[in-house]
Length: 114
Length: 118
Image 1: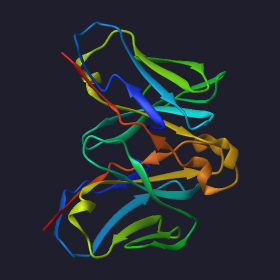
Image 2: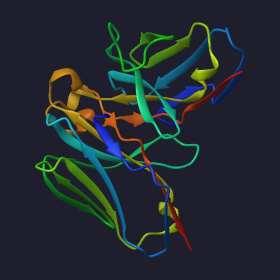
Image 3: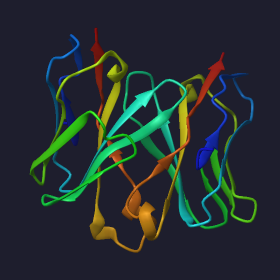
Image 4: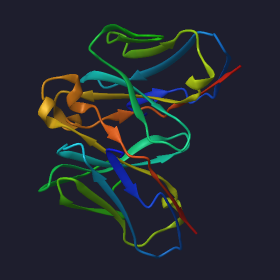
């Protein structure tokens, strides 16, 4: 079983929809949680990061972490065609064998159609 | 100019050939990483380097080697390429200077190299 599981989709939604992307993980040492966005033929770019449990909002994007359930989410409100990309969750720990390294989910392919 | 550059961007080669992928960064970061990306598998860590004299194997290092020529340069070599090494390869950097904050582990990626081994 992978340390981080992410539904690869693909996910197709109409413009304006609310999108929910999710990851589950098994390593309780993970403390930092990130979402990367990757456009076609580009490298991943950091979208949001959060530390420990709670919510973080940035414009139309909200990142949510529930450490008790080992579950993280990214919500996109009022989705736009420009949001069409692959979204990857990533996690890291403060120490141990995961120190300084990120563990990625498989990525979810999102298409927002006009 | 891009902060993290990779060369070449595309490469087609034959089984058994030696291939080198190069990565350079102008971000001033001390940590560098090599990943491969395959459909449905996400990003898998090949090698990582926390400074010029510190190189470590990742999840899938077999068949690969690396060289950290300088703080800004990190090369990945396939000594004898095989078809199942066909993939998208990414270099990434991070900064240990932000130790203690979530930014410590934030990685910045290059544009990738698409490698095809026939």
